Image (cartoon, rainbow, N blue to C red; front, side, top):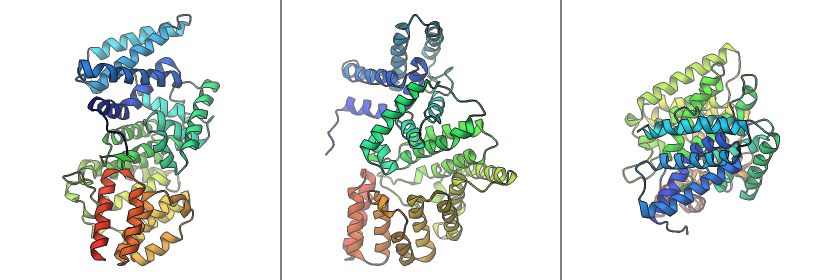
Length: 428
């Protein structure tokens, strides 16, 4: 059972989760070292834990953390007086601190710094690192995800991910990789990893892996902002626009994914009149532009354009019953051919259940390539439970839902699975 946090502990914990990526990105740019930046961030958080119980929580705690971290970074730079570059950095960032202090808007705390998180994403996605290391390191530093969270996202063991992150940081340091957005000629090589990172950041926010909240809006906002920046950097590439479209279409459902008490609401039961019409329109516009770009360069639709097209099928349907399930299955067929991902295959199973029925879907589920990789993935067992429930196999459904419940730490998902277990029990 997780420990019960004191109020200040909880505030600092939530603040760290929400702000650590932005703060860390800024401090890395100042000191030029990920390890030193992480030490500074931890030190500032400990200071908050010590001071705030006596002095009170600042009106703008995020700005307090950012400012304190910058001051610590400047102290580090001053200790390197021998380097002319350090003196230049000190002068530049002291000016930025004064500008930030003069601003009343916490969201403008980074005025003048440029897009530090985007720089950090591209630095972490340098080709000197293997693809898996690029993604894991960026999720750790930019999204502030724990090693456990990243291991679940990769369906990998936690020690494996921890080693991967340590080696990646060491490799960047040893290679002297600059902290910057690369030149135009280097962007295409880093693009696949960057898009994957942004997508995984959004997914973590879509259903938080732990805690009492279904969503992490902060991660959604950051992912969409990063996707927008990448699309602007590469306006002739379809995939960044496809990813942006996908995130906007998914985010349009925010208001309807949880009920009045925070309970999970399935897509089939959501009130579509409450979907964000502006986000839907923007998502569909970006998808149209991405598809047009693909046609202009005679390229097959990539994975993010395909996923956006699937999301668009839901966005265009006024009711669940009006959904074009045949188009969605075809979309997943194409996506599965490109990726071979068992998670994509599982999503395809859900679409088959709507198009062809639960029996056909259960057969498709049991024949997924790489099914064993999903055994620790709660949505595999939740999906199996839903199919078994439709087939009136109550006891089997109860076992599947119970296993799914044991594999998620999100309390809202657990409560939803409790309701499904109870429903199967009443039917029995």
